[in-house]
Image (cartoon, rainbow, N blue to C red):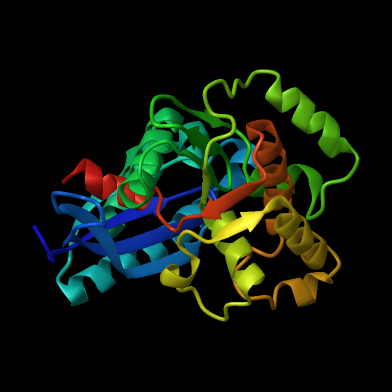
Length: 300
């Protein structure tokens, strides 16, 4: 299996991600035995915003289905050109809530030549944790802030909160106002962070990647420059303030905030701050791993 190119597709509420990666043998310092880890070779992100339809009508519109199929066809052609095997495709929160699931699955299967599976929030949390654990070890907590939901896991337990950057944007606009405090209080009523506080936290997902790129002023995505990046709450506050003070047009010009990310990023950062406070940590790290990696470990 080593060095053979494999692929997965993650179809989320805000974006779709194609991962092409290979298992490579690594032996870290202090380890007695080498082990197989995933090394990304190519990653492509396309904005789909399926969640917009769910919050408006409860189903995926024909227009969004066509856009999604266009993206999936492009991914399939990339894989065909490179001779890469597609191992799995998964759909998350938007599809968990869509009334017309079968219609969307049928359309995507025709475009991608593989039928995606709709995974639960708990499964998403577990696969995301697995992807980060393989790079950074045990004893951590992972937070995956997506467009429509947030998955949190410590390995032993994991859960999904139906809150994401796109969902917040649809409810509150680009910058949350006074209503945010009440929103957070109500959301956390049903959530227990027992066994997860005061542990090393790794942030996964588009919100984390965009945050890291703005923080480091990276013109292009570079997973090696981002992976494991440590940030403090004051760093998060500084970036949030910087972005919030920009006009919509200038915000969209920042690195990492292209393709529709600029209008949802502030909501994601507000939500991240609230989660970190509940987890009682002063620092956190960014990881570029995620569900798409976990799907390959699952099929290893």
